[in-house]
Image (cartoon, rainbow, N blue to C red; front, top):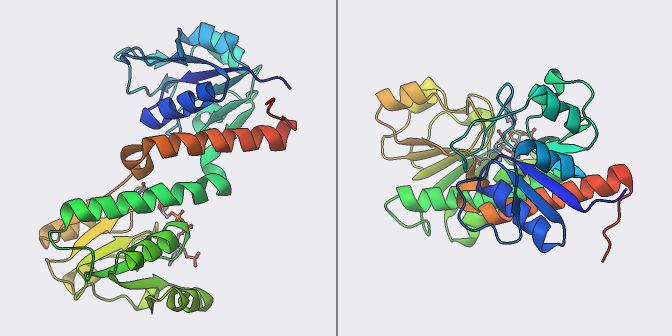
Length: 289
Ligand code: NAP
């Protein structure tokens, strides 16, 4: 398979950085839905049909599409998939996130959902953890160093974030449900607690939740203090009873899409790497150097 031409259709800053990474790697990159950008460098602006027509592969937003509308923060014009553009998409691999809407829209498109890949999720955990520390620094009035932090969950983000907070000299407690995770947490030099035993957040300065389940419920919040800052990283609807937190005057932040907001260049490079890995796996594609 020869891949020289890549179309980026809509998206946000990380999509733009991913497009630049492709261009820097020697690909011809066509952008549709980026007309508000002033400087395109090596990228070529096109309308959606000609961008897709020229492309060997198409990249749609990591955030997915809404019906037939492709979100594009760099355009005031609505970017839409028409029957004609869908027909062009049928002849080439498409890379995006939250691909179900497109798959339901048209069954005959070869779509790869990069959000479902472990390599993408693991790589993305690093900018998410850094972004979480940034949110904490912006919203906590003390120092991270010496602060009492609780990280709920020891998955991809929980592992990296808890080690990062430890490196910043915070007093870190981490929760998990698996006994061997509790052992790993201790071997990281942090304190371990069973997630199911969390009844209160009192005594913690900053709490980071990474579990996509309602863990910080009304009861936990009622046993907590209003001087604890809660940063929920879990995807919607999150792991915090936000209504109860508001009533109890507890400061909560649902910090979502951190890689794109805090480290868009790194997030773009992760999109680039993931697409190249899929091309190698699925098409035995080799980069010509
Ligand atoms: P992950 O690796 O799957 O980790 C999830 C953690 O939650 C694991 O420790 C898991 O425990 C625990 N867990 C899940 N269900 C549980 C339950 N019912 N009771 C107790 N523990 C439970 O996920 P991740 O990659 O770290 O991502 C965490 C969340 O952040 C997800 O919602 C993800 O979509 C979101 N996310 C947010 C951002 C952002 O910018 N805020 C960026 C990327 C991802 P086990 O290991 O025991 O299963």
